[in-house]
Structures are given as structure tokens and as C-alpha cells.
Image (cartoon, rainbow, N blue to C red):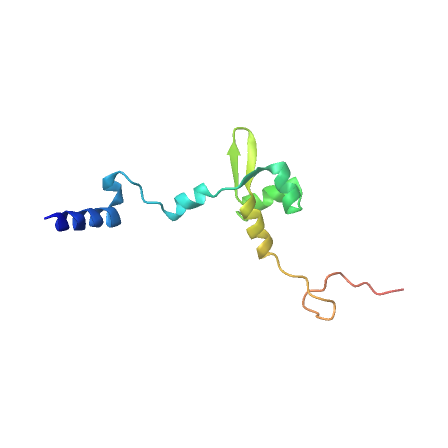
Length: 106
């Protein structure tokens, strides 16, 4: 009899934890717990861009921002993710993306 009670308890804990008063953690909950919010002013320094560019990136959903009272708070991890999406500048020998515009000399 005790064996069957243990099996039932294991089943409820593994599959229906909310019935026992425990909440299953979803991926969205995990993201909410790991927010690394910094004020906009610090985000500008971390990102290396100005306020106008920051709000453009927020509108384009390339970085994540929240309102906390009257302050704009930026998720610092989203700035790092944005930096990872930037393309690399290739050396001048490669004609696909030169690092500067070459002007003819006079």
C-alpha cells in the first residue's frame, strides 16, 4: 500500500506540481528573473550610442527597455545581444565592406 502512495506522490510532483502548491517555472518566468536593468544614461555609455539612437533601437525592438516610474530602464543583456548582431568591418584588401570610404588623392 505504501508503495502505491509513493508512486502517486511521485506522479503528482513530476507532472502536476501546481496541484501540490508548487509552481512550474516557465522560460518566460526565467527571463523575468534574470533581468539586468540599468538606467538609460548608463545604457548609453555601455552601448556606445546616443539617446536618439537608443530610442530608435528600442522602437526597432533590437534592445529591450522598461518604464519604472518616470525612468527608462534598459536590459543590459539586450545591449550585449545587439552588439553580437553587428557586422564586422573587413580589411581594405577585401572590397565587400571597406572600413572607410577611399577618396582619390589630388
